[in-house]
Amino acid sequence: MNLFAATIRDGAIKGVKTAAMLLKIVLPIYAAVVIIKYSPIMPFLQDLFFPAMKFFHLPGNGIVPLITGFFTDEYTTIAVMSTFDFTTAEITTIAMFVLVAHSIPVESAIAQKIGMSAAKFAVFRILSAIAVGLLVGWIGGMLG
Image (tube, rainbow, N blue to C red; front, side, top):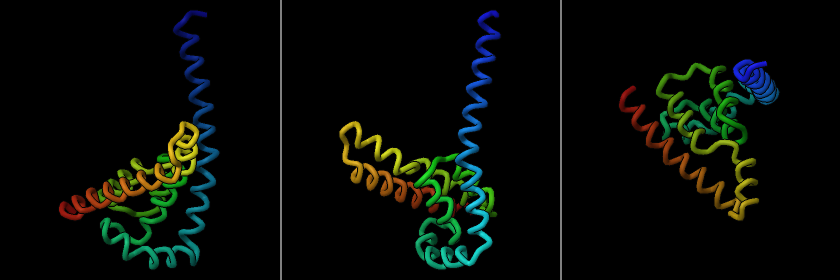
């Protein structure tokens, strides 16, 4: 087998493995979010976080993809966002928020392994995400 065919085969195998790994994470969380969305929990979350979400120019249900992103990855956040009807500006704000602070438990554990304080690392990322979310939300609110 020539090098080109071997490269294509290896890439395809790795791609399928990566897709399977992502689906194992994304599908259960997507299902959980859909259940939450149509349960009494969603109105409770919306009411609880609505005042804070106004600062980011987000609706109360904007908290669901934000929390999901903090604990998982960007791909799961995208899946969660697709279950709601967010505007382009709201999607951008959520995406920027989560790009700054995602997978906090995993990445904090990694930071600790390399000698950083996991708590300081997590707090820094969350505060940075809040700052970015405020800025992007403010810009989106001006344009929207």
